[in-house]
Amino acid sequence: MSERQVFINCPFSVDYQDHFRAIVFAVIRSGYTPRCARENDDGAEIRFNKICRIIEDCDYGVHDISKTEPDPGSGLPRFNMPLELGLFLGAKKYGSKKQKAKNALILDREAFRYQQFISDIAGQDIHAHNGDVAKLIGEVATWLRDAAPQDGVPGGVAIAAEYQAFLADLPSLCADKQLDPDEITFKDVTLLAAAWIVATAKAAA
Image 1 (tube, one colour):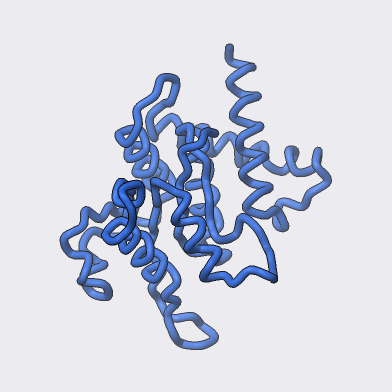
Image 2: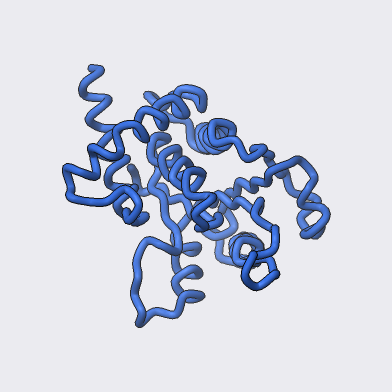
């Protein structure tokens, strides 16, 4: 990982867990440091302020606005992802010279679907991942590679294959740390993925 930080704005629901971890893995494998609202659990910090602080720190942002269906309990959709996308775009529009240099990747399940619920971003380039994890990794990896090319970083197809190998090793990695795979946090995933990537690279050298 490096000082180049990527803000990850995506659903944190159970049914999106594999996609979330795939984004984290792709960001690390591309040589960047992932950041998100789940990176710490400080009850003394207002969540909105924490998100603003993280966005301010990050030059790059991955925003997946694909989860728009109503919550089974409340019958209402969750608007956290569009809100955080708006904060990121607002920082780029109205912020300092550093903030104006921000670079965003906006993702949805289908091309042009976003026009039905957030048409104000119709002028943006929206990338579709079709709900497919490998496609999602490919979109993230390609975007980050174009943003700041560096040697030794493979393409999205290779990173997607590595991610599947990481998932296969994850139970044993968790067992070594006395962690249950279902209870690992964002920080756990980040550290486990980074260590696995380094160890795999050394073994292949």
